[in-house]
Image (cartoon, rainbow, N blue to C red; front, side, top):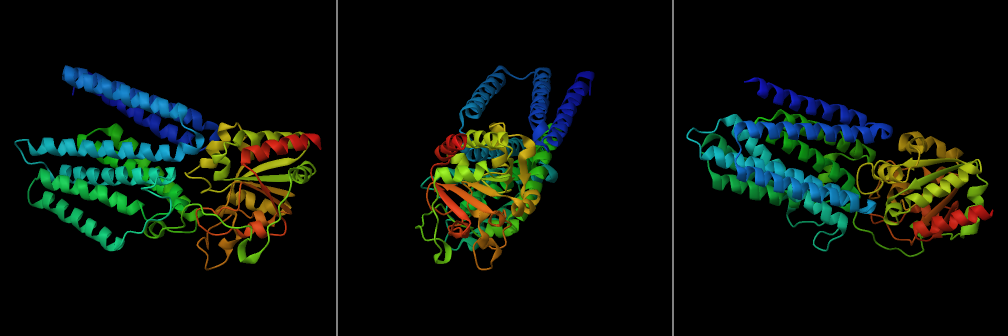
Amino acid sequence: MDALDVLIRLAWLAGAAAFVIGLMRMNSPGTARNGNLLSAGGMALAVAATGVLLVKDGASGTAWIIIAVGIAVGGGLGLWTARTVAMTAMPQLVSLFNAVGGGAAALIGIDEYIRLVGAPEAAPLTTTIFVVLDIVIGSVTFSGSLVASGKLMGLRITPSRPVIIPGGQLVTLALAVIVVASAGYLFFVAESIPVMFLILAVSLVFGITMTLPIGGADMPVVISLLNSFTGTAVAMAGFVIDNIVLIIAGALVGASGAILTKLMADAMNRSVINIMIGGFGGGEGSAGLAGAEGGTVRSIGVDDVAIQLAYAQSVIVVPGYGLAVAQAQHAVRELAELLEERGVDVKYAIHPVAGRMPGHMNVLLAEANVPYPQLREMEDVNPEFERCDVALVVGANDVTNPAARRPGSPVSGMPILDVDKAKQIVVIKRSMGRGYAGIDNELYTNPKTGMLFADAKAGLADLVAAVKAV
């Protein structure tokens, strides 16, 4: 190893260190932006060092053309989607990015195995193991993430409701047996490109059958899990081509995604296995004005809500996916600032699985420049609802449903925001449509609850004007 090789490896190590430090800084909303920039800088350094290595090894002109086209197309699409994607479409974009990462890792494994089979000497067992793991995990991530993205988009071929496959458990078991048997053949019998492609095909099918039966309410957990799979596949690709940057970066993404998945599952009081096996809820449905258990729904006008808010001492805003759909984050911030000018204490209650991806509400409100200290996690804010004068629910549904405290409900046992303990409750909602659990929200028939039927953005704008007039 000459001096240039040492410098290249040191650059890779520095890039990996930037990944670690950047990930640590993402632990806080106040430092997350700088952490993201630091991680991006580490990746740029690693790519530059790899370019130097290619020059040193005498890469062909064709290789440089392929690299340049790949960077231009991939970078261009990434920049365009990042700048143009609506905040409501961010979850499906994250799923697509997971698919791209998993697919790229799988392609590395496929290319490496084809190269090894054509080599004079047999591939070592350790390399074959990493190749197979790379292909399996990457392929499952690729197809599973595409299905998850389709569910979030509400495509007809991938509806948000659980799609139960006839004999699904037997199908899953058969696919797993085929993968294990094929991998055993490659490990202990002989090298075979057809068998490798059989593993690829079965893994792609497994990703589809794994994700289709999962309902829309579980998508935040599924996205986090698939993100962990993506990191793991990238780490396996790093072992395959002996690249420490891929190993470290993949391990970081895989580990952090696994931890986040566990935290998200705990927030729903369910195990990851339970989520993967049983579909939870379906797509949004509609219900009449009769609420849960025959209760009645009380409609309330904008002026009445404005008076409640203007003369309250404490207001807790509960955002949900409806806020994102209406792009109402700036309107809710404007209302909160107006109330603060009148001396009202305003906080935001953030449920871990509100929205369609991990941290969806945090990202949404940060985009509207809501002060970070006002964003309160469920464990911190729940004790404050009893002292709250008005809880303002904007587009949140299942995460506020008191039915979760009773057995026998699809959401039983799921920790919820204790909105029903507030002195007065206002829910801004377009209709009495159900959430992804597919059940009525008992909060809507609570005698303390007033329903302001309106689009979130329009309703909040009307409230701003009404509060100014109070």
